[in-house]
Image (cartoon, rainbow, N blue to C red; front, side):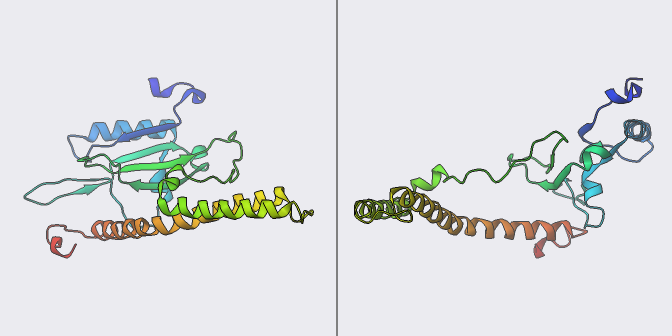
Length: 214
């Protein structure tokens, strides 16, 4: 059997939509899949990470009549050794219009992955398109020019073109960071509102009976 090959050659990660039921019609499929997972020593990463949390779902039927059902058929299976290197397991919107599935996501880092620090601070290109930012940068640049002209007469180790240039770059980053924080705060609030609504919907047992409350 292909899945019983040498341990070193077995698959480490399995991504799939488990669209089967524990019924007499799908029993053979369920048993075969269970045997595959056990043989490859694969675990459900999201389930392991959320054992004590509320149930969440990645799929919901959209029937106009009758009772709709929800399930978490979209899954990521992986080995225990890889699970220990994973983080940020989430069920998120795929962003694809009319798709009736949510997407399971996670970050997985191998043992050989090098450490990555915060990196160099930069200003996003989109920030520079705002007139308000352009005006703030213009005023700060004019101040730099004035300070540079004055520094030639009062030059010192603490006050010279190099230190002025450093302060200038730091101020530009601060201005851009403060502006972007104010701009995205409204977007974050809207996202939080929809996340709260999603959590409320997932907690309702019968969507049809409580549809007016959502």
